[in-house]
Image (cartoon, rainbow, N blue to C red; front, side, top):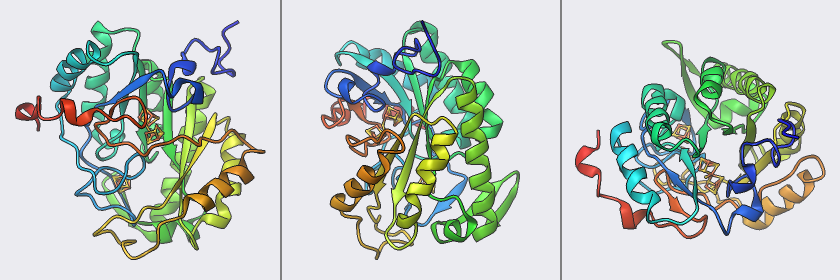
Length: 294
Ligand code: CLF
Ligand code: SF4
């Protein structure tokens, strides 16, 4: 039986998604389409010269593609990379702050490749607005980064949030962000979308709060959480903070796994990553489309 509650059997081929399934990691590849340069919030760990840290290592810059060049790149790469099962949009900014580009990219690739698994990573601010359209587009795997549940913690992580034409600073912005993240996740999971939640573990700011986040998103039927280390980006407000040691990240994952399945195999990719996780081939294909970049 195909059941939306069981993503392994839900017909969405989660078992062929290298991030959502550990077993798929060594066999199935993904390609990220860097079509989303703008962002609508300001995280203190971000330096916008580089890719969005919610899915990327700091200090990595990706080329930016138009939807048409993304489709051409996909067509070129799919014949050269074995088991390319997933097309993901993970920046270099925020996918939903570049909705037209994100939507067109998915539509264009889907038109000639109906069996692709589409995946998207978002900060969640615009999720209540776009969740239904993502479902309509056929996106069945979404990652939302949720670093806190309270504005008191949020104001230490986010400088501002641009929402509906207005800029909200600190706690006010963080409250809007959290509300929209949780509402958006619920809207997706209710419709059977398989949701992963990324959490950046920031020592002294949200580390003690992470088990609560995991519990909350489990209640919203999230499939898996991915607790990631803070890797301070040069030029960001958190530049002088220390990197969260992987030993402590794994300890937190172990604490939280009794509550919900944990991801242990994230490689913090680039926004233009290509290939198996941990065997990035993006440089092999980069530049080929740069003349068409925005
Ligand atoms: Fe890309 Fe992210 Fe989709 Fe995977 S990455 S949009 S869910 S296809 Fe994967 Fe990379 Fe970790 Fe992300 S290893 S950073 S979890
Ligand atoms: Fe930077 Fe990503 Fe945060 Fe936007 S959501 S500010 S791109 S880390």
